Length: 231
Length: 104
Image 1: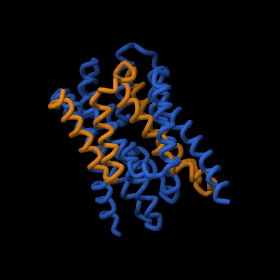
Image 2: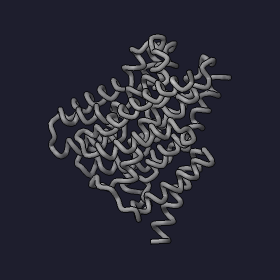
Image 3: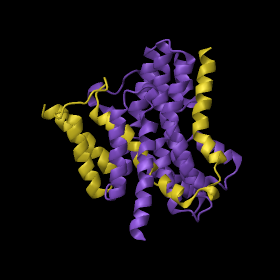
Image 4: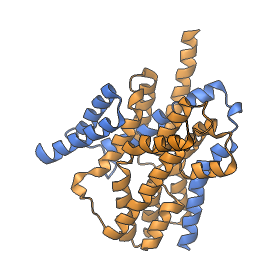
């Protein structure tokens, strides 16, 4: 398969997952300017940081006068889930050169990770399979920049009453629906979800990575247990 | 000064993305570690989903009548049966709109 075809497949595969990106980018643009950041600063964060929820947390904390340590701590905690995505992707990127690794790391987002890691898993024999993540990542990157600009300069063009932020949990749900028929995954999902509710009010938005580690611990136990049964 | 902190935040974010890809040699990952890694989406995404559906902006549990919960359940059922990304998102959003615009 030609690289360009794989690149295009990445674009097509990620399309449904771009639904929440546009309203979320607009909200970020609006919030940034409303909070008193300059339009250029608001926009620059979208390509320097390129991670929606940490950009919002960063600007909120900055305006509230939080110390840089708190701001950076929050950004690190919110983004720490990338370590897990990186660990998964490292299995497929070990033959790529330095530039590719830099580029694809920069483009790593929840959605790009999700669609492209499953493609990479199923196409490990293809030497150009990584073009899939270039396609999915660039699509999300471009939409994020455009929607940030729209939020900065056009304001809230999407009526709040439409409740489009609700598409965020729906999209993440859509990314794991294929696991809902596997009992082990359902257990891991419920453990992660429940602990996120329990730890939600802990500082630095630590609940995401904390719940992920608890759930992965449970998955490890499930693997060991399953091994025993299959013996 | 804020520019400096924005760049540091950008570097930290990039580090979270790049470090594992740069430094893990997949051949040293044990079989069990690789198996655990297949659960990463199921371990991370619910922690983003649950608070967004079941908690309000103050971090308190929403009531059972909240349209979000019911729209989410419909999307869950549709997703379970059709295993289709777009259908899951659209069915959830349409039922959410149905609940908030026509049935409330």
